[in-house]
Length: 88
Image (cartoon, rainbow, N blue to C red):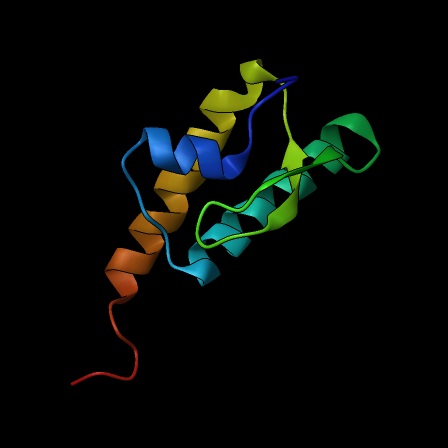
């Protein structure tokens, strides 16, 4: 493998995100990459993390792992603090 995906970092942290959380983190990471590198992140077709089939995932260098972890923690903390907006 040439690098790491956002979903691999979620899994290694023991976090099983809702789709909206994983999409949010993925979007933020892609923007950070574009800001730093001036281009889209490299993508690879890899097996889906849930269900069957495959999906095109953005691949980041292993040294980007701390940034991915930070964005995951920030995003999941925000989601926890908001709670269920439509619940009781």
